[in-house]
Image (cartoon, rainbow, N blue to C red):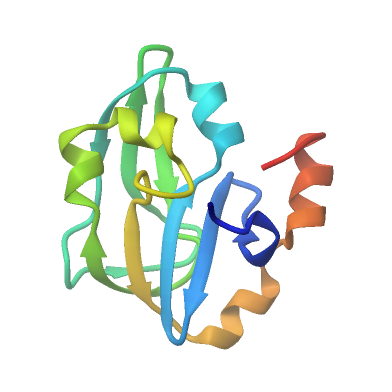
Length: 127
């Protein structure tokens, strides 16, 4: 089980786990629940440059189409092909098998993101 208090969050409902200069990014359980059953995930290609707060992918559900925003600027070093092949992973395990992309980033940039308490306050409940 992922320690949700160790993660960083964005107001766009993404979570970030930082290990060295690699940030693993996914959407929160709150976002997955609001989207409903996720049926399609489009992610940027490995080697792509992404910019903080810019659209870098798409998530479609039975309810709507949502945009995936890059929480930080960086280079995509890995994408979760399992989540692309089986988008329901994002619903069933958003903080585990449902992660979306890994980026190389400036670790100092993570300091500007929300901590767990601030994200819980934003959403009125858990992540």
